Amino acid sequence: MFVHRNSLSILIFMTFYLMGCMDRNDEQAGRNETHHADHITALNYIEQGELYNAEAVIPPQCYTKTEGVNNPCYICHQSYDEKHRPNQMRDGTLQGAYAFSDVGVSNSWTNLFVDRTESIEKISDSVMHKYVSQDNYTDLIKWMKSDAWSGEVTEIKDLALGAAAFDENGLALDGSRWVAFNYKPLPSTFWPTNGSTDDVMIRLPRIFSELNGQFNRDVYYANLALVELALKDETRTSQIPLNEQIIGVDLNGDSILSQSVQTVFSRTHYVGDAKSIQVSYMLYPEGTEFLHSVRYLGMNENGEIFNAKRMKELRYMRKATHMENARINQTYYREAKEKALENLPSTVDFADRGMSNGFGWLLWGFIEDKQGKLRKQSHEEQFFCMGCHKSIGSTLDQTFSFPRKLAGAEGWGYIDLKKLKDVPNRGESLGEYATYMQRVNGGDEFRQNSEMLSKWFQNGKLNIEKVTAQPSIYSLIAPSPERAAKLNKAYMTIVNEQSFLFGRDAVVKEAVNILKEVDESQPPLKPEFQYQWDIRLDWDAGSSTLAADTVLN
Image 1 (tube, rainbow, N blue to C red):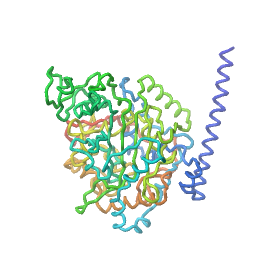
Image 2 (cartoon, rainbow, N blue to C red):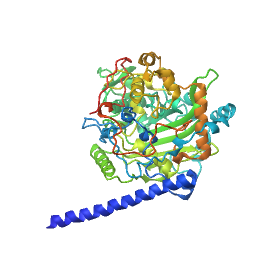
Image 3 (tube, helix red, strand yellow):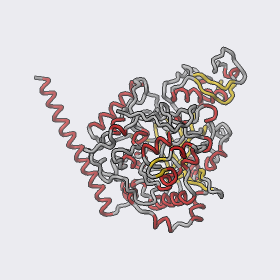
Image 4 (cartoon, one colour):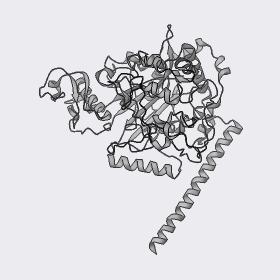
């Protein structure tokens, strides 16, 4: 009898709970309709503290029309068999089923459906060139050092200049201990041909860079190598020359302490003053920081694309809490349960300290204001970042870029696309970008990058021989000067509107391969077009013209 009453109580509770969720979903839908009907601006929502899109964690790419065969979804949604892998989201099934809340089925990214051609024509090339050549990072740092900001101050002197702020091995010249690394941008949002350039820096806690309380370059790079091995699940890597005699550790496993070694084997513990800290499998140590600048497309007199001085956004992550696997698994279970119940997503916002993703990381970001100065993102603008850094199956410890770092010593240094080849992902034979374009049937998730289609496709089919013949990924994913100018101007119109809540993708013309409403009864992709994929890359492999697709099901 007790069991019956308890079951009935649970049933009653769940009924009223789900009714409450439905009410909240209806309220959100009403807000979206109001936006469309009355042309309420994004700033109106921010200034009034009103929520526009409760499902801001669903990125625009999730509304792509796949026609059942064009698959950009596999980059984020993956399931892995390894029980020891910390990421246990196992959301590869989302390649074959929509699992949106009642709010999520409606596409709130209305900027995708704006034709910006007329607005772009009003912006001159000279005005745009001058704008992207300006430094808006230095003023941000000055502001962060004022009483108006109580969070971390992420200063790297001359960061606006890009590579000039770092030495040949990526170490910041200003003594801040930030280290830039060369990595292969994730397909395809961060391909320059789709609107932005970017760079990423990592910084380990001070103890990882010190020996007897003093900064030691050898110790720092040895520990950076150990982090790389842990994240990539490897046993050895090359590294810049390190002095084992100074560190006091046999790094290359030859039982001799040498003055110069360039191989580091995996270890159970870090070295130097961090020698008591265990290396955690596929996890960063507590206190790890990442700094990510998203920039406009710079162009030199030869039409070559580079990272402009002006930043669209500055993003920051800090691992505030180390979580053991059991706790991580519980968090993933809770995420899966929330999705199954179609609850609206939520997060804890610690203001200037950052927004918690629930997995130990705090995130915050800055974005341009109407005058082009970097301002703190609003709660909802920041919440957008959780779509990628919270609960998808492909990430390693909630990150993308570092697991994709060019392997070993060659990967330390400011990002340079001309030094990177289109190597395949682990377990595949065709170059990653060629594979992506083949699976998506285009050069972007929306299949509307006409320049990529005309350049790499012939009669609707990817010209694999032409793609694999390219000397670097730069020639694959760099836009023409004409396209770069249009993309810069398209984004500038969004900045002028301050309409980031409605989408921050630089779309020149109205998107046509995007759903405005999702029919959940129709699966996104047929089983034979769902793929298993690993975010990590096979840097030792050459590109092949033979595709080796691994079907998910």
